[in-house]
Length: 105
Image 1 (cartoon, helix red, strand yellow):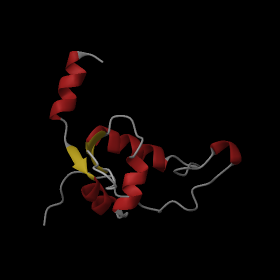
Image 2: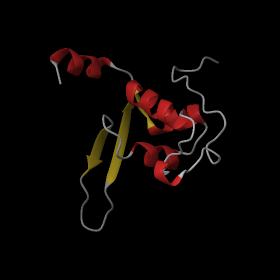
Image 3: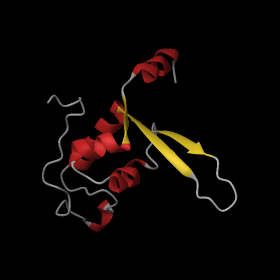
Image 4: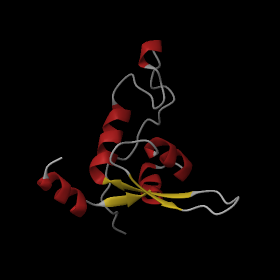
C-alpha cells in the first residue's frame, strides 16, 4: 500500500456501528456481523481479564461501507448466501439508504 493511500485512510471518515445501523435501518448486531471480517475495518479490542469477555469496537471507513453496500445491492446476491447454490435477494431489505453523510435535522 502506497504512502498516499495510507494517508487518505487517516483522513477518511470512519463510522461507528451505531451510525451505520441507524442510517441503513438495521440493528447494530446485524452491522457488526456484516463488517466483522471485512478488510479495512478498524478493530479496537479491550484486553479481557479472567472470565470477562473480550470487547471489540469497530470503526468502519466510508469507502468500506460503500463497498459493502454496493456488494449487497448487486442483483442475485444475499449477505452470507452461496452464489453457487442460486440464493436470491428475497430476504434483502428492498431499500437500504446509501447516503452515509450525516443527516440534517
